[in-house]
Image (cartoon, rainbow, N blue to C red):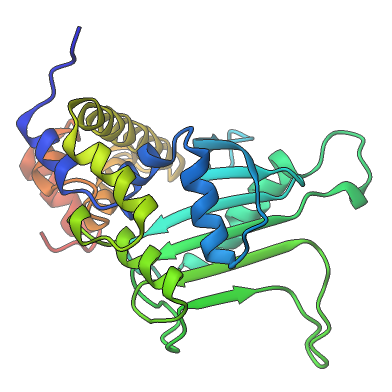
Length: 282
């Protein structure tokens, strides 16, 4: 039986870009060729063969610990772990967020019980971003740990990469990033991204999958905000955590403000009041 989606959900699904979390996770789900293509273009390598892809992996190891929902985690034939995160909003905490994500991947996936440290898997965290958060005019920033004085690299197998669509570099990477931020699939220059986006924008089955993912995405974000609200220990913590999380989805372009309010479980006045207290100007 076909699930009935609201007009607003259908409009939201059609308006999403590949760089928006909800659409990206839908496109990447079980789509090894797409994920492999993105990683190959980003790293400028054609020898990477992806074996498995996992989207929306919720890493929450301890009750007292901040959880992480990964956009897309992949592993290649050599055991290298790749985490791809899409980002439309420039937050000042992205560098620390990348560090935290990397550490959580290490704890859950990089080393099996009783294995020696030499077996620790290499991990690469890739942020695909709309803007250049460093403002230095580069398209791709790659970070590895180095000794401070002589730049001796620490061979710990951990890399963090930020790629942005604001600056130009390699043509294939230009096309990839331009396609990720495009609203119209006909404007996309990356053929793999274009064909995948077309499916989710022009077919009934594809549209339904995006709507379903949008509902799940908002519901999971709601639960995360609720848990964060409980952890801050305030009387209105649950509501505050929920509003904060939903407004992040609004700012990232995944949902509209009206949709956020309707799914918050709060009255519009209460929602706006909490948003105002959090510093959001609606």
